[in-house]
Image (cartoon, rainbow, N blue to C red):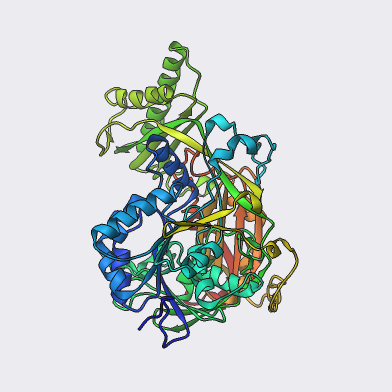
Length: 612
């Protein structure tokens, strides 16, 4: 039997399933997790910086759009009867930039199903109507990326909010909570705060709950998806399990998945997700707490069960991150295939000709030139720089793309790429439907705003309740718990004995990479901590800078994580502006760890036994 809070009365823990890692995640997750039949919450994360720009464009066309409609149609509607029967509570940031519209659509679906489920909606993160006032403050970007955009070009302004308003909505009696741009982990932390009564001074507990949320916020990435040792999950990829966290009141967490599902929960899969898309692991800033994940430890408890402990926290920052999307011209492109003799050379010349012809036509039309162009020969060497192994591939894909201040400029390029098909070298082919279309470029501007700029409102049962975070959050330096139990000194390499040999890093470590704006992070986790001193010594910042010199415009900084036996590398100015503006084939650094894992590390021969 479950209490009104949704927590079974006969156990002390809390079980939360993570059913979505982004807008577009698989629709099977909700049904799969409900089949487990003993969850208290299912949480959904739909939002990313790119997603916000897409939703902003949707709302601009339709005032009732701007949220994730498949949350209603695919996740909720087919499963509402079972959600109601089991008493599982739902928390989702599917509201995007229009949570009220999302809430309205969900209530209509619940009514159609003849159910009595209470929906709460939280607003306050959307500051779009304050564009001019914020512009007048002369706010600088938090990454040194200029000044606040022209208000006339702005599509959305959203502040990253936290978990306490979610907890309050649950306490008010909500069965389903819809929010906008909260941080990804807040949907999990909010359930913990509500269930266990954690307060804003209990920083270590808030950090533990945030870490649990961080582990499941990307769905199956914690259960074998995107895993370095992908072959261990290859045969069960079609039925990969979505993650479940079992959280105790003291913050101890166990990661698992539905028993009958595929995939894998191991120190490797969970560790990779922990290190995914973070910056300084000792200073991971969230609206509710500043987290220190450097001492986090993982223990394999059994098949597909991993215990997580050691998260630490200090008080939350005074300011909240805000992301502004703004119209910054247009972009477009196409991918074609060449095969046969001289495939790469043919593709390169074809792409050059397309850009050259388009540029001439722009001049003839008295239009400006392209603001940026990109040609990548995929299957040859464009992703690898000096480390490319294939120089004369007999089959390649060529990606041709450009940016222009006007939609008409991109239309010229797309038309001329098609028009060259009968004029170019032999071996051109491809599989596509209609010609690609120009897309608006919604650039991102990130800045910090005072907390008081974003007062929250909880809409529930025809009422609206104002919610403000406690003033005590603004007190810096107040800490709780024991900090940094482990030695934070990077490991020294043992005195060499005997012969050495070089092995690829992938034999010694797991790796995961991701993006934050124009930055990329590459997390490297030693498979055995005995390898870590050699990795630390040889894979320094300069080595990483050299390895990625074909992409990198800034510097690399590395951080030591003794708990996981890991190193996090942060590459600055490496994504050509980031996911919403970049013309790269991989604008979000999803494959960067794969490149780094090819680096060779020299270790003693006896240590390499069985690796070669």
